[in-house]
Length: 250
Image 1: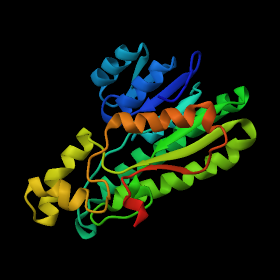
Image 2: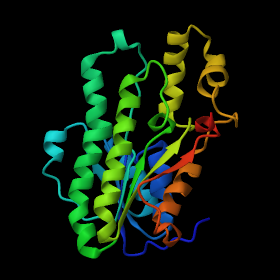
Image 3: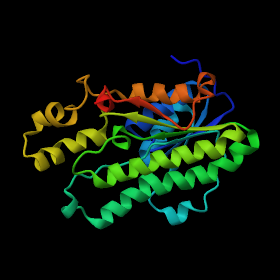
């Protein structure tokens, strides 16, 4: 386990009520951080916050008009919230595309914008954006997700360049398929689009490009986030920590 002491630090984890976000919240809480668990589902946020001695924040991150006026006092910001929609381009609902970009690109921008003044004042901050192998590679039928993650990669790099003189780092963590409700929900959609039975989707579609044929566990991603918040990573910024089982090696 990465040596990490975040005592007296405040961390915000979006999408923290389940999956990767919950694992990250628990990892940062174990390191001593006061964790704000943000999720659209207030009950799930409260449950995880209770586990880590933090506080829940029920928030609709896609309501970017409301989010624009938010002020944040956090030392670690983990932009994790996301959803998936699988459809051919010509069948992709425009309102769904817009919603996903608000949630996974515009909301992280607004949260970074809100958090940077406090980080700059303290001359210390960590922005960790949960991107994806799809931030580096494309797949068919995932236009909104791929577009949002590619945009998040650029936003993270700009944050890194602007934040460097102020002691703030910004990086992406890029997992392949992680064993989460988001991934499990995709199986039926992928089966429909590709015309395969569900029991063949994981091996033949999801893990087709990964050299290591297994789903990644949420705790593995949480450890990557912890590393980026640790002293050992103080000179790592503007880059990606890739956990994709060899997908992007192709």
